[in-house]
Amino acid sequence: MTEAAEPSNAIRLGYARVSTRGQDHAAQSELLNAADCRDIVEETISTRRKDRPKLQATLATMNAGDTLVITKPDRVARSVKELLVFLEDELAPRGINLHILTGICAGIHRPNSQTMSDKMLFLVAAMAAEMERDLISERTNEGLDAARAAGRVGGRPVMVTEDVLAAARARRERGQSVTRIALELGVGRSTLYRALENDNPPTVTGAAPSR
Image (cartoon, rainbow, N blue to C red; front, side, top):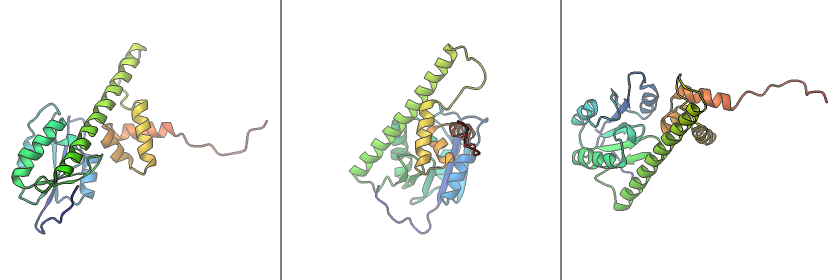
């Protein structure tokens, strides 16, 4: 994506959203604070709802050249189509930039200065991100169905499948933090920590076993 200097008086506002009151904004806020946001707006609202009152109120206070910062696209949109509508109808007319912190869509998207090739690359990245999210959800559901078929019913569902764990392991080997991996894969941070710890048990040191 084409980079350009932001106006000296421009501000960066972070937006964090979770779906239920049982979740918290801590992981998103940690990344947003590290991204030099002047303020962070937190909203708790279902993914199924298209309206996001706090997000709309935040945009109403922003001026041309300001930047809205989010951790990943699904914080503001439920699909690629909705993301493109958000960019074209909500941000572009106001001259507001969008900074996505994680995932293959990461970077600053400036709707008013993007070339056609930049827009196409962003569209492809957004579609790939949506496909990855859907694939993880599908495989998680398949794992739950298999568990029910085996008679393991009840209790908290297992959110980290073998596929998710493999993806998390690969990303951690590339140097990503567990917080960022959990956000990108859509699983709980503490759940992923436990899964990775169990996946890599500590090596017991001591005398070699006798033969």
